[in-house]
Length: 278
Image (cartoon, rainbow, N blue to C red; front, side, top):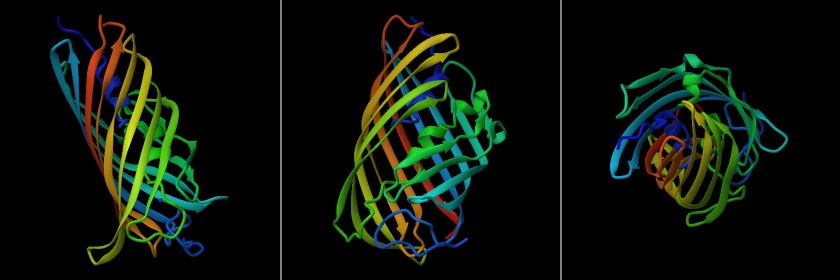
């Protein structure tokens, strides 16, 4: 039996599972005004999704690229970040239809959020998204996961800290609740392109639940798995230079049009790099 699935909805929710001059950077590894008030970050995101429909294995792939112009201002505790999407492209390859391509024309306005000293996020405003852009640009999870969590204290090689990244709200074609329990470890200094940076690695476990209605079908999805990666941080500039994340999650998806739950696996790799500023 072949089951027609809300492919794009599955992809948009699976993506969640898975920082002018200011005052000097505070002592320790923490968020505050960086040495430059503006920066440009490039993000590349690649995800493979497998759906098991009772032995019928369906595979999708989503490749996404984006360029963000970030502006930093002082906040009561930490900083406020306004991120304009200057370039955006997404490409979906799916077994039940032709390829889908989306550009940045459906994204209007910035993504704005604040970060306290440790990187806890308060979402302030989101871009206005077209129906197509909603399927590929997860504004809520981008705000909460673009930057890492920091200890807010001085650190040395071998130091570790833990934090939990949790958020819930509207995302894509429905709503999402996500919890990532993370452990960070300071590796030490590393030289990249003549720049002395601090390297921090992280490992963790992630859980995400999404639900909504798409293409006339109700759906609910649960996903859990592992996440790991690293951060490169410029201590004198007070800025993130690189954020690499890879995750592997498994779970299930219930669709009103399907007579049984579908098995889901999502393997994702994301790289964010500072390309201008600082």
